[in-house]
Length: 307
Image (cartoon, rainbow, N blue to C red):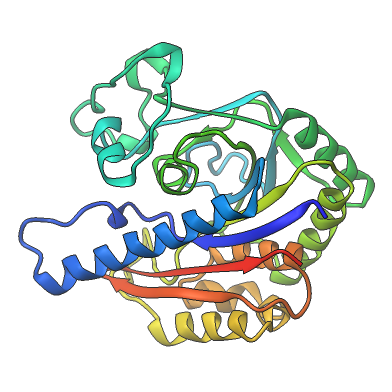
């Protein structure tokens, strides 16, 4: 079997840092999140994966209101990205170690006032580069089109800082190739959850027909409301309900929700998790590792074994 497991991990940069003014309770929550990512990293390593299918919602880095596709697959040889701070600081926390782009050993931080994770450091170079499984990405694009999914694709996808963050934790040596699958988890109308689940089932057929050992990585919140008056609110009750459903193997219940409902709950990024659940298959029970609420977001950590 080519599918070797799955992990669901948040991509919030708050897993990295605590502000000096924050109290011991907050710092303890950040430590719990980092420990949970360590558990997921162990699952990735034990899976024996040689390729990671990363399902991640774009944060206006690759797309904007001129064109915001519901799904988009990166087809190419490599994916480049920036971090949320200087690579040396990120690596000290995450343990990521590998040769950087063009042999460079350090990168300056982004200019003042420029968000770190969207900046073009050093004239357009990116400090993080991941090898893309080009053959499988091309096959997945063609097969999904043949299955009736009108799949968008790009040959030049940029990894934002949040996505680089999870790779620093989960693929610290960059020794696993990646497949990068972008979604729209922010801009209404987002994809229907039931369509996301169907897409996941189609992707599973493609994975099972390949020779690769593929691990699925679903990134995302949970509850948060970026760019809205509700920023800072967190629907912890719904977050825990979602995790409970996944632990019971009832992902189809999530897939039955209308998109307006998951947006109202601050969980638009669940489209990533629902696609992953479709890949994993019906009745698969997740192992929930942790849930912590930081000041503006709920963070859930879970994994599924191969089946």
